[in-house]
Length: 153
Image (cartoon, rainbow, N blue to C red; front, side, top):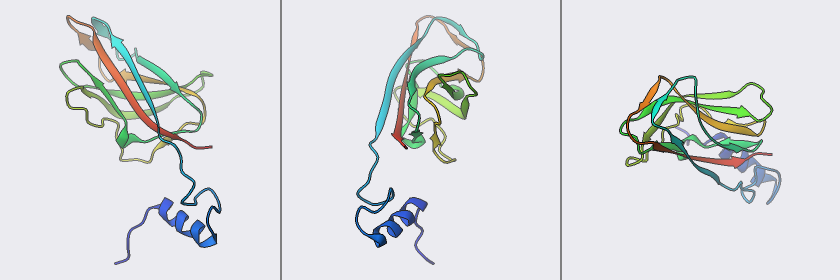
């Protein structure tokens, strides 16, 4: 059985065969890893499924790396929902479904990585919408977004 290689690795092998530094897939051209590290507070009361927890925005060309990204909270339970990437110009959002705000103590990845990474075509706000109405009973809860991405030009 042949070795299994990624699409990127195959492109890099082809680029190296052409010579060092040849083309965007060369081994000496690397993207920097960026991190949106932001915190929002869910107030005491009910956050409706039509309401969102908002974070900063990511730049055009940001390629989100799901298995390095997470949403966590000091709430007592996980919160299921979707991550909505809303362009600043108000055009249609890109949604990542089946996202979970995990307990801060567990700090596990909670953005599904079964599909390919998402690359933004416009500067976009990061917003979390709960799947169901969520009640925060007695004390406001912090929600941290740690979204890892590279920038693709």
